[in-house]
Image (cartoon, rainbow, N blue to C red; front, side):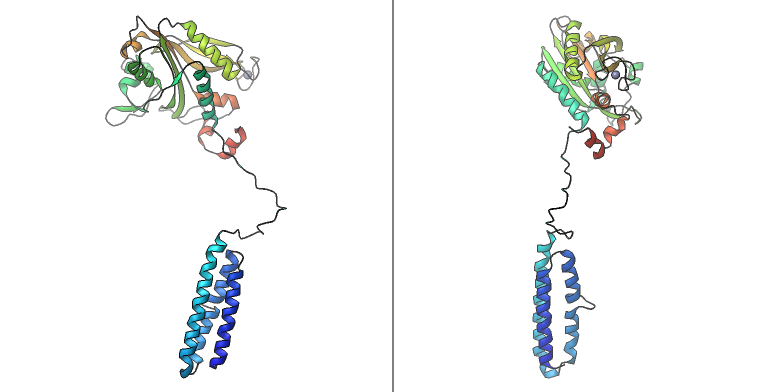
Length: 342
Ligand SMILES: [Zn+2]
């Protein structure tokens, strides 16, 4: 090959290469051009380099200089194009306005979060403040201060995870009641949302970690009438319940104690799948705060009385949406959340 032929070939490769790189519309086209020109095995630059061998010795410096020039320019042209095509979609044509729009998924709140916020809103209107406390507690705050006698069978229902050094994961949000009573003087009206732990199996109706909301009201002259009036008002606001009923129950930290049911808002009390045919939905446990709990927290039980309640927002979310399995609430499956998002 003569020098003249070699330079003509170098010009052609440079012209074609610059056109191919600068005209590459997307990453695929750019890569194809790179292989054709700069590829190690069959690229045209590689062939041009091999062509140097057939140039007469006297012309080699001139041919080599031109070869280096072309290779440098094409490498630079390729590099400059990489960033430009990266931002563009490969296919199909990016501006086809006849394509249907992609469905947009706007984030939504988890059904349990919504229930918690609704409950908070109702009680905030009634003058309650939100209180929070630690999830890792001492046995005294979780049991002792709440009138659980040591080794009492009631503790069995609250089996939990014990931590090194004597602490445990709280089995209810009640320790925050004790901490509030210790810290603030009555009158007290607090709502306590939070995560609690039990050593329960993870099955259709139990979870080892779940949400709880408790309420506490302590003042002079507080009676069961206040408890019923407040909880009835709450049931009316949250469930649109026309009626509620109180059934006697037992908790170590309240005396007397009662479970509250609300009339099923779906069937109006005639019985349906949501209320399992009973016409009623169990909502919460409640009662008058046991004098021993007030005294343990340093409150004069002769002067002050109070009531408290506790409920599970997960169960409320489940009955509201007729969810068959509590585990669905913990799956973080957006296909489920999408179905009940509002
Ligand atoms: Zn019903």
